[in-house]
Length: 380
Image (tube, rainbow, N blue to C red; front, side, top):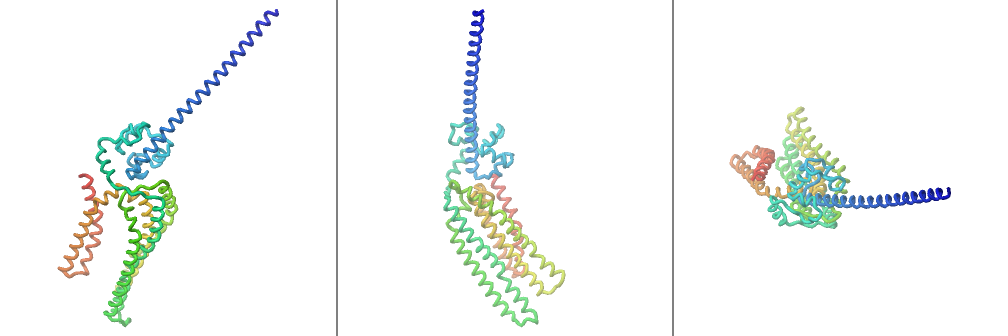
């Protein structure tokens, strides 16, 4: 009986030892699997981060915004933001398309060990020519100084533009008053005073334009040349642009509304009276409203354009800058021909009161001319 009890005690002890060993082995195996899983997860995250950085780098080198890249890739801007933030990974089709868009190999996008861009053969010549272009470095101090200069000059430039539009009002009103018997003013006096006021206002406006132009001359490359901003500049500019968005929209709406409503006095006068004096007065009111509207538009647009130039977005992407450079020649020829036609027509017919009609026509045709020439250049 004692022997049997000893046997059972030995068996229980052995079973407990085996069970304890089993749990210890299981615990060690679980911890090992967790470490391996964590290591794989970290490696995967590292790969995602590297791909995200490559997408950001290639997008900025091409001068595209997230919206433009999303349009080329056929996805939403939010998807591009997630790719660049390493919050999601593009599928295989999207990676292949990214390779075509950026002109790099898929190996460069996928493999970690390829740190330098591995360009596709079809893009080698284009990328070599782009690398020859001068890129201006913009530091945080330069960006802040540029925005301060634009903030200082925007209101003054807008005011000078407003003076140019208002300058003929006195001449028009005095000319109309000289033909009215109630106003004792001769035509010569009206013309002399009106022209003097016009010249003074134009002189003030030109002086302001020159001063503002000299102030911004050192940064004129922002609009036409490729730039590369230092770390933190883009974030700072985006914050300022987001903060300015609401005032920008408000001023733009006020300006456009004034320009649209400027024709109301003219058509209202046509409906009520045929008097030349009232018609001239309506034209002066039209010019006043246009001047006010132009002030708000120019002032708000100057500040917004400066921020877009630093970010190389909207009308100031690298691609559009290069297109504008190529189009500068045809545009100059277009306006020179228009001016030559206007002068030839005016001097030969002496119908100066009619030949001005060429400018609205030329202005309306210009976008069509620009689109046609730009399309031909792209095809060639």
